[in-house]
Length: 92
Image (cartoon, rainbow, N blue to C red; front, side, top):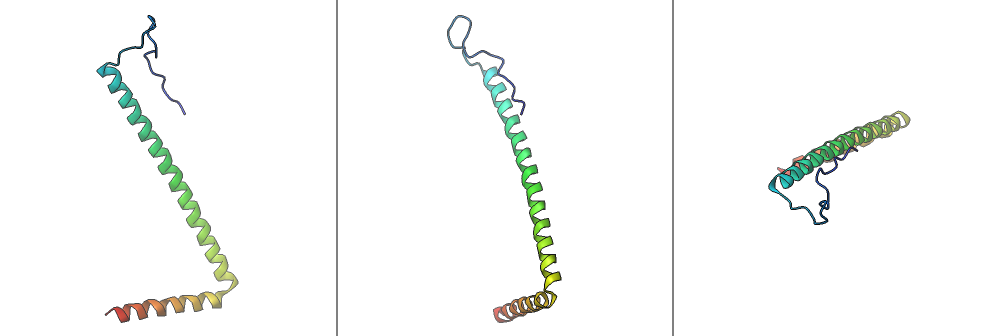
């Protein structure tokens, strides 16, 4: 990560701490906004990639389970369909 260094020193050449000006505070706030925006984008990209990989993995596991036990998969699907239909029927 490339973090910009502040342009003003933490101690003035005279040995006294520098006085923060409006321009310094505005610059620091701008840099902070840019850092937060960049970090937010990086986190969004990471979560997106991780989520897609997790969905792919679950899909592959489901396909493998259906291939190994097709009759059980059909029975489970029918059971879930029956339960959803019964729940919808009884809610009326």
